[in-house]
Image (cartoon, rainbow, N blue to C red):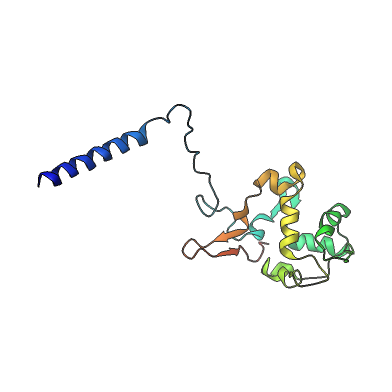
Length: 176
């Protein structure tokens, strides 16, 4: 019985010491752990749960219409040469992009699900979706809107199911 009481006292003392150490400032020469970084959809609210279509919207206050229906209508006539030059490296080997996008009905489409059919990795006529999107969104430094305004946050597009650990892409139909 004495042994049990002594063990209880030792463990209680250790618990008090551990609790005190947790509240104490870091020892000289060591750094405190960094604050938990907000990760949309994981440790913070996700402002873009449907991915592309929640970000690519009409912004009249900024005189910017980034909806895919608007962009596709423009690209059916001609793709801006600067954008074409940015996308060309992601085209399949030997394919020279023509500077126009084929007609598509994205206004009623599930985006990006409907894009992936033509932009699948095994397709030979168009850049694969993953290479093209990652290349456009994650290169260009301070000239890239996704990097400067959204810090290249992966979870704005990639969604984690915290119950299963599975990843998916946010998707949906664009707002009118």
